[in-house]
Image (tube, one colour):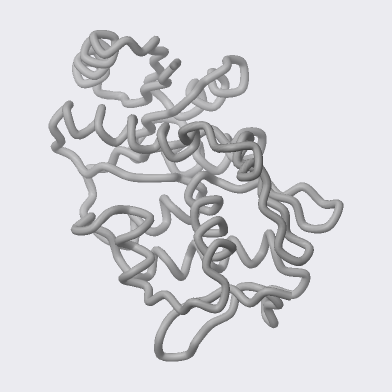
Length: 227
């Protein structure tokens, strides 16, 4: 697996690179946002660690630019603790975030967790594809299709859609969705779910303002309605 590590703190990058290489990863490094986007474009990268505060262009902008051509998993690194920054990071297309200062073991654990989500254990032949109404999801390639239209999803968006398709009409609270997708006790805001639901509706629904599939149970949470 090839990891792109992006941070303007060269000693931090050196430390992350050393430890990831000890875990068997191939590591590519960048020290500003523009270089990160170029490396992500020109190389086959499996996952990106992307700092928020970067020279030239910040991490949010770099994340958005990378999302314009790639669905590679992105973990944001941020020294800011404000929840709005974390939610904005996810809204721009990040899959996860880690707040500085962090332990390198936390970094490697998060990388492995994200990679497990996008490269799940092999399933039986009957489980490779799921169809519900106009929606088809392919487990092997973690792709989705609505009718004849391919839909590009981030890993978290795919996980969310998969959960709903497997459990039609079951209403999930925001807290339950956070626990399922991010893990119990993971420090995140319930608004994170609202951001992901809005983005998923924009990609799946013909009219996101009046969703056909991804419904809201007012005062409770969200559920999936089979067509």
